[in-house]
Amino acid sequence: MLKNEILQVAIYSGEIMLKSGAETYRVEDIIERMCRSKGLDDVNSFVTPTGMFVSDNKTHEATAIIKRVKNRKIDLDKISQVNNFARSFISGDMPYEDAIERLNRIDNTPKFHPVVTLLLTGLASAFFTLLFGGMFPDFIAAFFISMISIGVFWSIDRLSDTQFLSTTASSVVISICSILSYKMGLGTSFDMIIVGAVMPLVPGVALTNGIRDLISGDILSGIARVFEAVMIAVSIAVGVGSVLGFWTGIMGGSLI
Amino acid sequence: MILKQFLFSFISTVGFSVFFNAPRSSLLYAGFTGGCGWVVYYILKSMGYAAPFASLAGAIVVGLLGELFARVDKKPVTAFVVPGIVPLVPGYGMYLAMVGLINNDYDSAIQIGTETILTGGAIAMGIIIVSSLAKIFKSRKTIILHSMKKQ
Image (tube, rainbow over all chains, first blue to last red; front, side, top):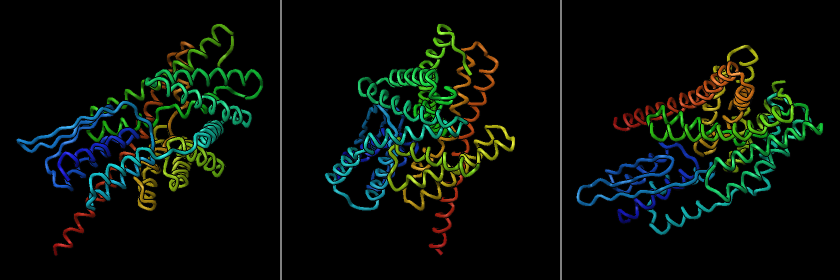
């Protein structure tokens, strides 16, 4: 395999992992190990959440590849498949076309059926409502509201790249629906419904990964991830807060 | 009571594993991880410990089970840890802090907000403690194996 081809395979694997929300150190580690196993000893990789740089630093014939990564969505199946691929790439002798074809197949693996994802996410949010201390009517309300909000999130996410818009819109939908269902008597406390239904949007994983990166020394990507989490949290607060503020200030409702 | 809590968080975690598109074989393992983490958090919380400490203990349990299942199921640790920490994420604290801000009640907003941030940090710390210890043990094991081979 040519040097350029090895770098191409390595950076494609890294790109799939980064797009699926893998930790920074894991992506860097896999790229470097894949290159070293094929005889490129002096490879450096620098990975940030929005792009990565890989270069082979042999003098006279140094090569560098830059890859920009625009959107990230957590996809644990792809991370684990690329992990397995890297293991067999390192230990075996895989031709270039084979490797690229396998990576293409991994990149296009189907997710769970959207209806299944929707139903199970709704169920998860509904059980969160119970965990936080909600009653059975809240459970039903959170189930449907969270399914509606995920539908809204997906359809806006398809139209625009900015996550701020889709998160804010779906948290507005969540709070309006929660207040409506509370008013119609379909729930006992709307704060429980909101908290349960908002759970799929909450950036807990982004925050944890960011702090992990910070502590393990990847300062740049750590700060980027923490701020991504802060931005998502702010957009949820804007969505929920504006509806609640409107409700208390103009409609004369009360909180808690 | 604890069984009910375990069941609820188990189902929630499985639901979130599907939302994060986890590998099919790891769904139940991930659910078990999340359920155990939440139960530890719940027990410590009801014994009167502060939320950050309880979350730290819960996250350590999540990390340990993740390392265990990663070896059983041959999948990266992330596949179990990412869904597993979701029940511990302080969503209700974030909500209450925001309600405080809306009501111009900055005292409670800052108090609850600080606790929420500390809880988030504690979860990350728990995961990091386990993963770095696992890495040390792994490298120690390979060093010992290598030296045995040389002899």
